Length: 398
Image 1 (cartoon, rainbow, N blue to C red):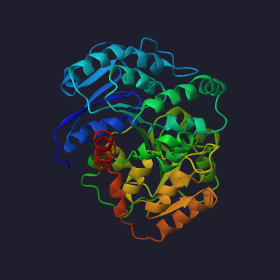
Image 2: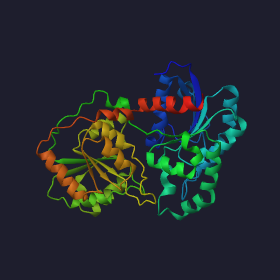
Image 3: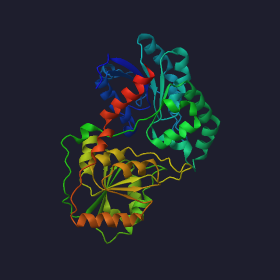
Image 4: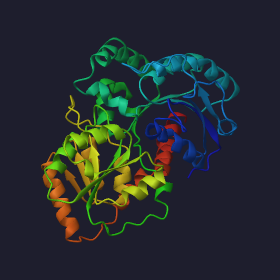
């Protein structure tokens, strides 16, 4: 840890707990928690989902400022953050006038929060600006088959504005190596100030956790996370249907309960589903620890042959040390698993139902539960906060 004198950074982020998008919000929730260990205090401005203009006493203590968006349109494009990004500017001016910040961080979801980069470069040109591209939206311009409103927005607005924002930034942060390389190709002048800072897992969720041999009578496959146009449950469910001779339970921790129920009913396998809803980190770890196979789904087509978002649950799965089924294209997510997983199966190398059958056979033969790879500790959010403080903040602010 750093013995440096305490300093502060100002962070603009779309969501901060309590909020609906709890998974995305955890990135800066835990950075805000752990950065003080490295001498960095975080003042955070986020969107107020209650549409009120006050902060709770707890927020004030923690220097969290919630600002409502004047517009709440979310379909067909979520433009509420766009108008919010302009609404926060008066507050930003007041905070910057009162306190000297070591840096200003503009975080996801891209791209609307980052529109403030030129604004900050004008009102406080001596404060470094960091663009945090660690939200999944960052990868969307690199994927095919975008909805037409998104395509239009990207071509007429997104890419033009991005150039302006990148030009005034002193550092760029990316959650995967592939995305970092794509941006270095687009903006070669930023190669020396682009950093790989992964998302990681919550350290405290694993307090007291020890892997143990399963006592389940059925083979439990777990999926944790949400569903969207980049994550379809159909490949997994179709494979499970083809494994009708195996006693399978599908444990789902996350959102979209109605969609899961509709999909399993359509396939005639409604009896396998056990949907737990959204759980807190420790409860989530406890639930997933009861499964024999942990599933990741990344099922979208790509323009880039190397780029794929790394599911935030990848790091949780790796820390659990359980067998992992990865359904998706080769790319960053598979690369991380190949390097750090103790036991994983890939749909790019084997049919999904065959992966399930191999994993089931190993479970039936009572193969000893492997410990997690010790190198996975580098993905703890406390360790990642240290990387951000030492590799990014100290370099650009020196």
